[in-house]
Length: 180
Image (cartoon, rainbow, N blue to C red; front, top):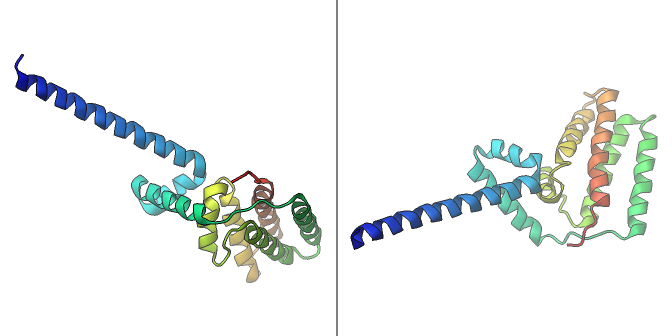
């Protein structure tokens, strides 16, 4: 076997090994994003028109999230929020639309106190998706009902569903007290 043939074989083998390593690295990165963002990963793929664009967007969200100062709440604050939630739920029977609005405000207050910006809804979705991607669809559904309820275009059952959806995110925000 000539030196040229040997060099070609080694070069081809090196290219195959490098391509395999890059493929495995990309697959591991994709799996990590899928695990972290849950259903939000697929939604972002659809919204962004492909995996590469979606993964860029999700990594950008992670970078933005890393700059936020997300903090734990002391037990007494968590207890106070839990009590406020109970009060909001109690009002539902007499004022369903008002309770949904109160639930939205309570969730926003909790987000703000934890360190999430609450300036705009789309920003909230983006920032919450990093740590709360599994309950984000609940927030979307609840917010949609809240917006429609302002025009009195919702049924009591839809409002009840919104409360359940808000509760899912509320519980996630209140109990997700990991060290950062």
